[in-house]
Amino acid sequence: MWLKNWGWTIARGVAAIIFGLLALLMPGMTWIILMGFFAAYALIDGIGALVEALSKETPRDRPWGLLFLKGVLGILVAVAWVAWPGRVGLAFLYVLGTWAILAGLLEIGTAIRLRRVIQNEWLLALGGILSVAFGVIVWMHPGAGALALVWWIGSYAIIFGGLLIALGFRMHRLNTAVSDGSLPLGGRLRHQT
Image (tube, rainbow, N blue to C red):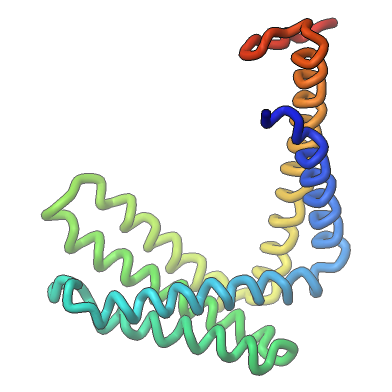
């Protein structure tokens, strides 16, 4: 029964809070780790974009050239990060900004093409606009953008960790109530004052 894992839920919450505090106290180290994860994502996304661009099943009215460019750029981002992790910091932000702009333009172009096929394609266009805006902001203020991103993630981790800890203690109370028979399985634990 999932209620018996309350201790792991609390442990996950504590780990999230520790990560959040470290992100706020050591943003430089957090930035390096986050960029490593982004490089892994860019590699997987790049390979996927290349496969899609070169696939015979991809409709030819799709902008395969932009997909191909996005794929190559994603792979280059990952390779650059592995080759020069310490020196790539600022350059990496500019590559990230360029990648976001290109990805956003691709999403906008796809939304325009999809308007004949589906409804609410504007959601994809909106995602593309936000991606372009993010890329422009990174280009204009790379250092501030990186620091703000790390602080946002750290704050989120602390809040999320607190919620997990609260959930873990609630799970513990429910597990105890089910175990001692005061709450039948499938029953609800009411808040007691």
